[in-house]
Length: 302
Image 1: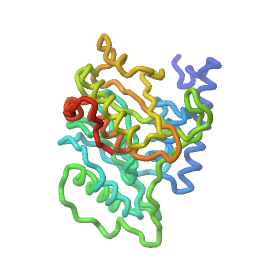
Image 2 (image 1 turned 60 degrees about the vertical axis):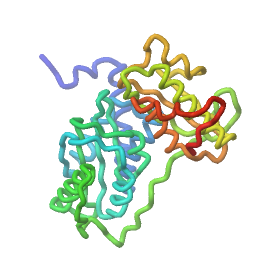
Image 3 (image 1 turned 180 degrees about the vertical axis):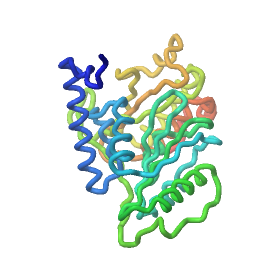
C-alpha cells in the first residue's frame, strides 16, 4: 500500500526532509520581516544553505499556499536583455511584493526580485518561449485586483511596452530601500582573509565554449584586473576552481546551457555587475566584439 510518508522511512531521507522543514520555517520568519523571497533564497543558495531542488517547493508552500500571492505564468514572447528600467520602476512599487520565477533554456530556475538589478544580471537574458511565473502580493491587506494589475503591468514592461503605472502600486507610508549587493568575508584561495563575492553564474549560450570564447574571457578578465589591480577573478566549473581558462574549451567540455561561475576577491570590490555582463557576452555568439584589439593592448571596459 502506497504512503505519502514512505520516502521518510530511511534515516537519510527523514533528516533531509527535516532540514528542509527547518529551512522553510526560517524563510517564513524572514518574510514576516518584510523581506522578499527571491532575496532570501538567492542569498541562501549562494551560501550553499539551500539546494536548487528546494527552490520550487519553498515557492509553492510559502508565497503561493501560505501567503496567497496572486500569480500568472506565461511564455516570454521576445528576448529581453535590458532590465535597468524594470528594476528602477518596480522599486517604486512600495505597496507590492513581487517574485518572478524564470526557467531558462538549460532548465535552470532563477528567482528574481524585479526591484533588484543584481537578480536580473544573474539571468542576463530572458529567452523567447521560456516560462516565466510572476507572483505579487499587496502588502498591507488583500487586494487581488491590484495584484493582478501589477502582474500584467510587469509582463507588459518586459515585453517592451509603454505602460500606465497604477497609483495603487505605491504606498507613500512605506520607504523602499534599494537592494544592496551582498558581499561575504571568506578565505580567498591561496590567500589570507579577504572580501570575496558570492559565486555568480554565467550561462554559455554559444554552441560550444570554444577557443574564441576563451580568448574573449581572458581579455575581459585582463581588462577588469587592469582597471582594478587590487582585485582577483576566480573561475569555477563543475564545482572546481579553474586555474587555466584555456582548459575550458578542450574537447568541447563546456557546451550550450552549461554554467560557469566566477568570484571576485580583494578590497573595495566594484564593477562586478559589468564583469558578469561582459563574461555573459563572451560566452555567447557575440564573443568576437572582445577580440577586435591590437596585440599587446588591453580592452577598456570598466
